[in-house]
Length: 140
Image (cartoon, rainbow, N blue to C red; front, top):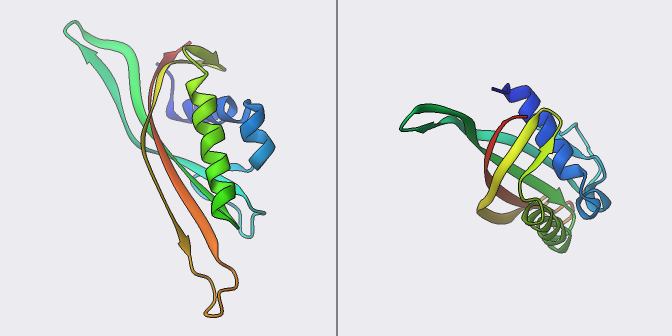
């Protein structure tokens, strides 16, 4: 069994290993919270649910986690490009090993978007996009 901290390290590395994703956000993918005044575009990720996979024979040694990404940028187009790159990277993976984690299956679950209005004069508008994925994995 792999611990949660290692899973998050491995999943972040897996996402940023994709050239299209890293071309858009560089290494600016943070766990839970971004630094104050992080340069846009950037993203954060967090676990929103987790559990062991149980079969008729008991615990299977695999687990499922739902991982949520939130991306912020100065334009909705940038967020759409990041989402397309992330979806493409995950769709191309198949079963793969990154670090101490064997990723068995990653499925897109949900997506939505919006903006923070900024100042009354329209300055400072920040666009966001939320993507969530269901991940089945086990220790490598």
